[in-house]
Image 1 (tube, rainbow, N blue to C red):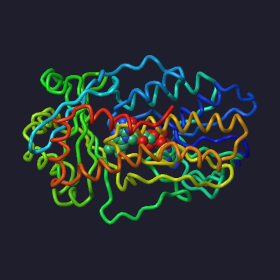
Image 2: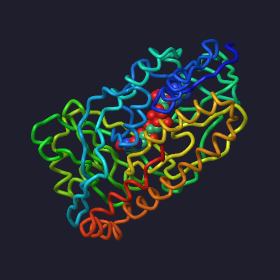
Image 3: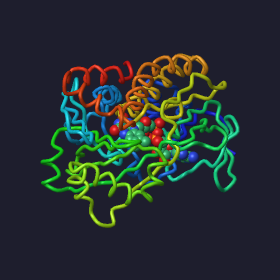
Length: 362
Ligand SMILES: Cc1cc2nc3c(=O)[nH]c(=O)nc-3n(C[C@H](O)[C@H](O)[C@H](O)COP(=O)(O)OP(=O)(O)OC[C@H]3O[C@@H](n4cnc5c(N)ncnc54)[C@H](O)[C@@H]3O)c2cc1C
């Protein structure tokens, strides 16, 4: 059994940011954190890959300045009634999660954190963890950063009658697709969900959907859903036409959009999606993950307890999550989506205000 120390579980943006910030914060070398990540090579997580200006500023503070990606400068909103364009308050970047997560983990390693990849924790009781083969680990301080994936023993509540799901697929690369999407982050609203689309560093586009389970069941699964929403929206069909045959569609079940917590138990810092899940159409989940990792490292270095950190961080996520929940409630309803379109057309600046209100403060 491995005992003691600071253990970071999960090498997504939250876990990596915590590891980097802890080491950069000048932590005693004997107390350097160990980060455990179950993937040997980072893949493309189910995520739109929209890095907001706030996320980019956090990455900059951590020292990650050389990401390649597509510059995104405006929002393009589609509903079955038409389209509206609105400038983003500041430029964002479209990137693949493979690039981002790999670069963050490499930075954590080169900064001096111990990183073990290809190790999955199966369950936990407080700060005691068990690997699938029965190996036991115990941490003095546990930073829980398993993101979208709940760890048995530290699960988040699931009480939604019609839960939200996430899907992701890569389109292109193709010159025609690049011309269609350009420097936009596109949101295509449909009954009980939306699709987000933007270009990423290699010219391909990341099509990410968040929707209610009932809609997926009605359409007979991911392929049927893409066909159905393509029939409802010719603009979306033009984009989905660039889906290569055999391209995998990744899925995640039961995403608890809007959930957040300010509670924890001594020694357990909940980070990223494990402390709050902002509806993904806000494009700020990674911003919250990075901010939580940095804030937890600062709290640890200052000797603050987990409970104090958790309550303080929950206060920071309150407004962005509340605003994003409200927008999602409107966007998912076909009867209300036209109002969103009309407002965006009438007052494009309003979309910018909402975009600002859904950012996590520095
Ligand atoms: C459909 C959808 C679209 C989204 N689009 C955007 C977007 O465009 N922009 C944005 O900012 N946010 C977006 N988000 C949100 C964003 O993806 C998350 O908020 C963010 O990834 C959270 O980071 P994290 O580090 O907390 O968790 P994750 O990114 O989920 O990382 C967790 C890590 O922990 C590892 N792990 C999990 N369990 C274990 C275990 N038991 N043992 C070891 N390792 C483990 C995983 O392999 C993973 O690497 C989207 C989310 C969804 C669902």
